[in-house]
Image 1 (tube, one colour):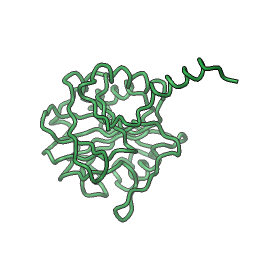
Image 2 (cartoon, helix red, strand yellow; image 1 turned 135 degrees about the horizontal axis):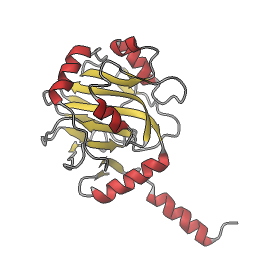
Image 3 (cartoon, rainbow, N blue to C red; image 1 turned 120 degrees about the vertical axis):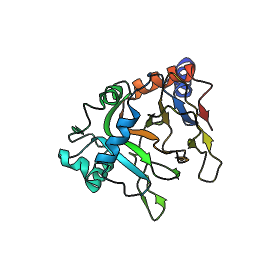
Length: 236
């Protein structure tokens, strides 16, 4: 039988790590600095295309069978569908690995085992969406039955202060544009609950990162980031 002190402790733990209303949070992991011109040149050279016709892409990491899959749109899409698998090889794109080493090194600062990552460069406005499979305009919830949130990890590679990336309470609500502090260009969003999108900015590049979340490390990082960047967070 549990005593009242035990119940109170459990309640405090539950409240402390309940991020269900946290839509956006900058992460206290420092900045990633890369040559923006180089990134755009690499996308121009190695973009395999994207099925949605919204983004040009540069694959970085994936559960692929060989290096040639990084140049194949359908093969890399299949790797994306396996991003939450715990089995199978995860390869890095050898075409860009050394050139973009700061990004790969930065992955080690995140509380996840990265299984899929790509740089996205939009060619038009990005409509509000979840990063889930969709069919006939309807999103299919392909997350694991129990998934940690927030788990949408992103890095904005451009040094811009123009409002572009936004979060919404729902598909029918007004967008709320994110702000990034100067000390970091990495952030996390609640992917499963709140849709996101972006206004088009020419040559704006975002690293989109997926993987297996280490919940203890994620809790520690989010708590530290919430305390440091409380003026920037978005809650609904």
